[in-house]
Image (tube, rainbow, N blue to C red; front, side, top):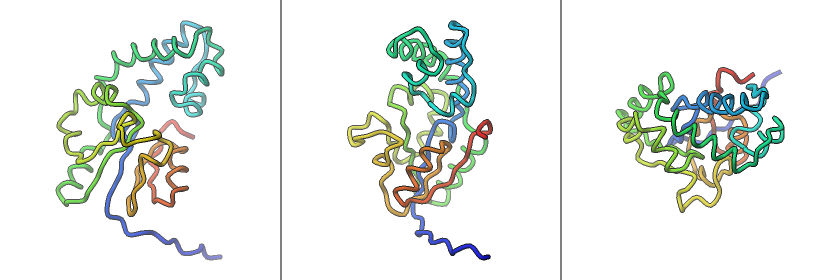
Length: 187
């Protein structure tokens, strides 16, 4: 039995996610939520993390934390501010982006992070992030809805690089082409 032929659009531009794809930050979220979890003697496993990815109310409900959504967000933001500056680039990210720039291949970044978060995460990598001609952030006024809503990605003939399955599915639903680079902990 032969698989049906795949029909790809010609690619003219590349769009990259940031967290977990260009910048190794996913483990920082885990560390912070484990610290919070430890205060309540609850287990914050990779399975739980992969289901919720920063959704405060879901984390509170699943882990049965005795705190409000606002308290969880405030506590996690305080801790994340401490750890974000130590984020390192993912292996091969800088080499790949420099290669794209050298060969005049247009690329951009679309992230669900806001400008304050990007500033902290990118503080040690300003030269790297300066290579991007366009960076779309969650709090950009042109973005009506943040990822995983495809509004932040709407572009024809783009190849999107993602590490989160839900964002891959949304991208595919827009009929855009996508490359999934899964986290090594994702089963």
